[in-house]
Image (cartoon, rainbow, N blue to C red; front, side):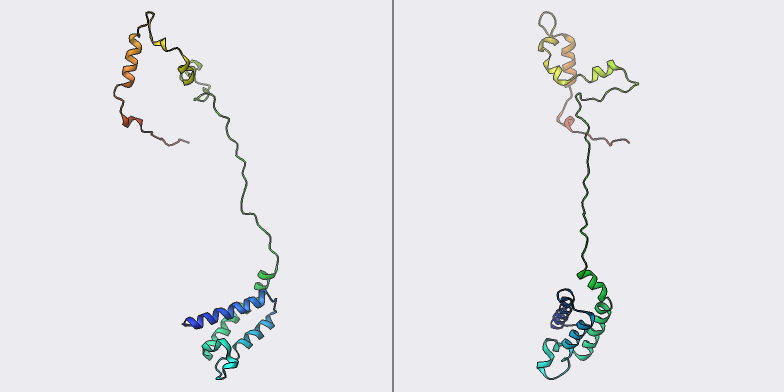
Length: 175
């Protein structure tokens, strides 16, 4: 309808008035149509007392507004009555889930499979805490000197180690 700002404001006031009649005052369809007729009665007249706030509309615009109210509000009046006046159920929108967690592992590795050997499992699952509790002299020979095997192992393990080797690589989990 290309309403200007004042006309749009008055149209929204009229729509709000009719919806309040329906929701708050519980007016019937006939009573609400009569109220619309009273509100629109003065449009186009020169007497300013009768036209009220809706004098910003022309007669053609008033007819278009009444037609639109008939289509959008009054034909669906029973639906709006149902929306405003019938009690609604309160729906719960959340779910509660129980999640069972696996017990914490005592060793850093899972138990061996049926095909695996238990001695290989025992060598791989040696606890790092137990290794720290071993006496520090276990790398030394009988005379208190370090054994050549232990020195070569330590040198080989540390040789070529750089800060770039500390990056963590995450591999995808195969399913």
